Image (cartoon, rainbow, N blue to C red; front, side):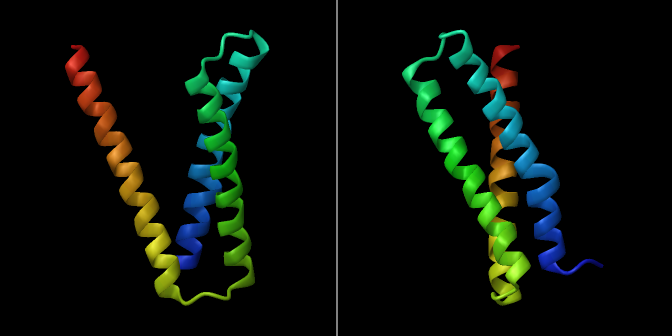
Length: 97
């Protein structure tokens, strides 16, 4: 079994960062066509900030200066948010049907 630092690193590197970068890329396409809304601009700022936070998580893992319990807390937080996000989309899809 992987330790929590490896699991967190994998989650951030292979799931979170690519998803944030893809979403940010889609938002930036709106800027190219000048079709962004104020909400889109806010989302761009938030996603850029979130991307930096994720990169900071990777740097902290690399430095290995936190106890495993802190890595676990971060991992659990991300997983909880992923679950809530996925659940929210399922509710929205059911309401559209």
